[in-house]
Image (cartoon, rainbow, N blue to C red):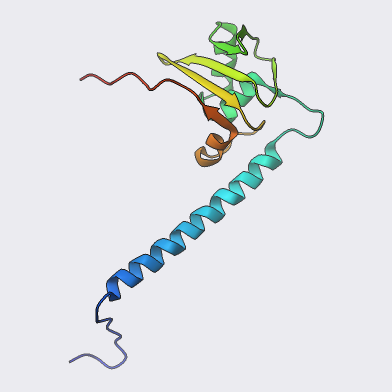
Length: 140
């Protein structure tokens, strides 16, 4: 006995159908968000003929927390581009190999996309190819 107007889903697969539809809608929304974020990253990229500084790029793709930490890492010899120690103002090009020693770990990335402004993590990982060795195991 139910109230008038109450809708009760019953039968085989009723709850599963709802969850599958919800998951599909969520995945489509996530894809749309990532696509919008990629468009924003492309808009954040340099115009034709402009360059991107290495300290700015490693901050924008979230390899380091702040741009000033990126500059400090460059000055301290912790950033190498194509095997050469670089200054913070060194300009990057697509295809450059960037090696960064930070927090006891070496990150080795190949530049896929030049961006100037910091973007979200899902977009940031699309701006480089990560060739880094796995992080050291955590001991307790």
